[in-house]
Amino acid sequence: MSNLKYALDKLRTDFYLDGVSGRYGSGKPVPPPSYVLWDCTRRCNLNCVHCGASKETYSAELTTAQIKGIVDEIAALKIAMFAVTGGEPLLREDLLDVLAHARQRGMKTGIATNGFLLDRPMAKRIAEARVHSVQVSLDGTEPTHNEIRQNRRSYTAAMQAIELLGEIRIPVLAVATTVTGRNLPELDSLRELLLRLGIKLWKLTAVMPIGRAQSAEMSLDRERLVSLFEFVRKNNGRGIHIHLGENLTYLGKWERKLRSGPVICPAGFTACCIGVDGNVRGCPEQPDTADNREGSLLERSFTDIWQHGFGRYRGREMLSADPNCSTCEWKSDCFGGCWVMRSGNRHCIRSALA
Ligand code: SF4
Ligand code: SF4
Image 1 (cartoon, helix red, strand yellow):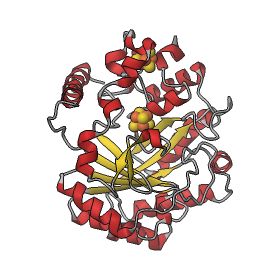
Image 2 (cartoon, helix red, strand yellow):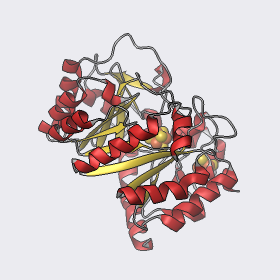
Image 3 (cartoon, protein in one colour):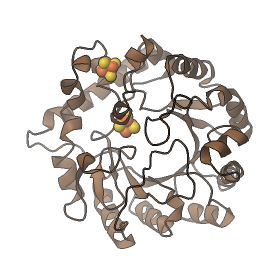
Image 4 (tube, protein in one colour):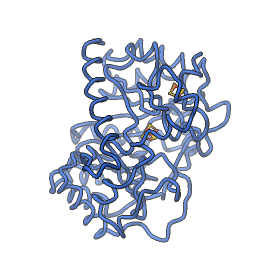
């Protein structure tokens, strides 16, 4: 990794973050986000052990007309990317209609899926909607994946999805793996499989301390984190780009060995998430609860919510409210870590690696 590139990226990132934080509460507008995620449904056809999509109840999902109206507004702000997550997005029958609409309005589109419903007709519809990127979840070898996903056909379905997406030549095809204590020993086998499948981008995200993933078997303690970092150091760029997710923020002495540029929590700075019923929050991994909501798109415009909300992110609340963070030597790189990891007290890599 080039130290110069990293240093320049860090300067650019700090300039941007300071600009947004400085404008917060000043009455000056902040730039629109670079991407918006739509948590389009909490319905799911699987019941994964590490799932963060808690079963909040909603009186209704946004209708097709409502989400298309929202898409029109955010497209007019020149937001580059509109991506969907869930639940399982492909369960929404209007999904590709909405994504085609976003594409027509000039945005790139993306889908994160478990692949279960991605058969040949669905692949054709994805191609017709000109979806830019699809990320398929794969959490280990066949027995492990099926065990984690609690469905004995889920691995075969994910593999079929990957092959079909390769056939339609989706511009960006990524595989996403949630790394747990359970699948960590399988990363080498998984890498070999992905190389055989021709996958160029592999997103590794540390398991979040939410839902059913809080057991000792699943979580990443110090030893497991180091083992994960060693794996990425050894294999990144060897036939496949490995992206280590931003919920592990600053990595200390590992940072420049594993990343070519700084990684920040994008919530409220470069991204936000539209929830199932139109409430906006920082990130899809956060529970869609009142304390995480910035406002409802059924009552206010996206611009109004983006310009006047997100105070705790832009005001760096994690640094000011946590004495460990406010005095930490890493604070200008880490900014207090990931909000969701913090909910389970797994946000601090520094103390984990001490
Ligand atoms: S103490 Fe806070 S700022 Fe420092 S590394 Fe831990 S989470 Fe990050
Ligand atoms: S809160 Fe955590 S998971 Fe969400 S965007 Fe920030 S770093 Fe990522």
